[in-house]
Structure formats: C-alpha cells, structure tokens
Amino acid sequence: MRTGSEPVTARSALRMRFWLSVWGVLWTSAGTALFALADHPGWAALCGALLLVVLVDLVIVVRHLRQGPHFQPGRDIPPYEPVHDRPLPPRPPESGAPPP
View (cartoon, one colour):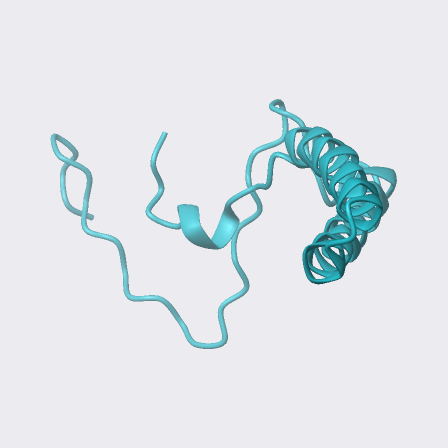
C-alpha cells in the first residue's frame, strides 16, 4: 500500500547491513594484512581506513538492532506517520467515494 510518505517512513534492512558489514570487515582486514605484508603501506592504510568505516557502521547497526522493534519494526507493525511542523493540505477524495 502506497501512502506517498515512503521516503519519510522508510525502514532500513538492518540484518542485511549487518551481514554486509561483517563481509566488509573480513575483506578489509584481510586486505590490510596482506598489503602490509606485501610492503604496500599506502594500500594497507587505505584498507585500514575503510576497515574503520565498516567497523563504525557495524557498531551502529548492532546498536539499532539491540534497541528493538521501536527502531526496527517488523512486518506486522505499520510505518510511523511522519511528524509535521505545519498542517497538511486535505487529501483528495478516493476514487469512487462521494465527496464529504
């Protein structure tokens, strides 16, 4: 069901982000170690910096997963309505419904 507010109420696929972060940690740590052993300090530093970014993302994802269903609702919980600072214009009547 489309409500027109999907970008505001979009949910992140945290479990997918978790596994992609784990995959990234494995690859960047292996790249850092292998480039350091192969005496390529620039590439090792680049992989090390990317490893830090992936680790920060992993920590954030784990934190959001542990916060529970309020921050990551399941399929049975409808999306939250966005908070509006100004009143919304009235919605047009649905097709087939008589005007109020």
